[in-house]
Image (cartoon, rainbow, N blue to C red; front, side):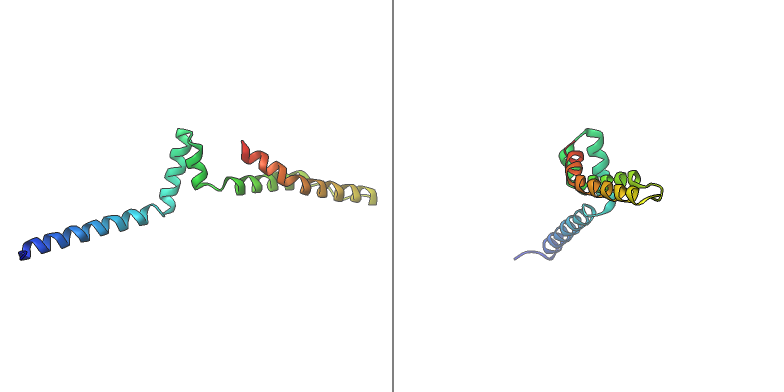
Length: 107
């Protein structure tokens, strides 16, 4: 029916196609690909693509945590009243984290 040459050519085309698809599938799941997409999105000011590859909410949450931690670094309290004030201040900062994280992420 079909000659051996036609069958082998068809098989080669199928193998090459599957190999190409496999390499593309692998490449689009690498860190290098993700980083190139992030850089491209930043340069093109494409926020949707940037959000696809970057956890903006998590990044903003960690940013708020780091800023809060550096702001709360103080000298040891010299009195009980000062220690109470520092504890209350730390509690207030903790309560303000979610709204500040959402505000940073909305920008």
